Length: 191
Image 1 (cartoon, rainbow, N blue to C red):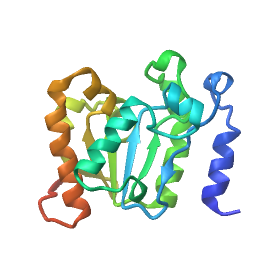
Image 2 (tube, rainbow, N blue to C red):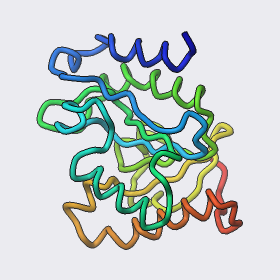
Image 3 (cartoon, rainbow, N blue to C red):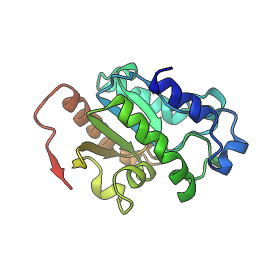
């Protein structure tokens, strides 16, 4: 069995935290294993829990439209979440749940080797980039850290709640597409 399939099997059988007891399905992630870009959200919602696929509910449908708008094929990226099981009532994951699941995401990054990791939302940015990260301050910037390139943007669910954030997010996705196309406008800072 290859390392990716081993990881999927491990995620499916995971009982590292209490979320395992309430899940219908784990939601490991999906997309190209050769993706240059990995999109990371916080965790699955009800639709994702039911299907076992990331970003398939209303936020996922908005994400799909955003990707289409900038001409990024969803199958060309890898989409995952920080945690792999749905928190009750779609609440934000607790720190112990994040800590239990983060090794899975790290292994996904090791296997896929993306050139850019896009953190969608505050939870993902705090878990992946910096525990002190504030999405309103780091959004829209390329940041290199420990040899990896990161970019933070708003979570699509936040855009469904606040129309004022949509234009910034559209611009962010244009920057992601420019990076994918090799355009030099993707400046970044090192941390």
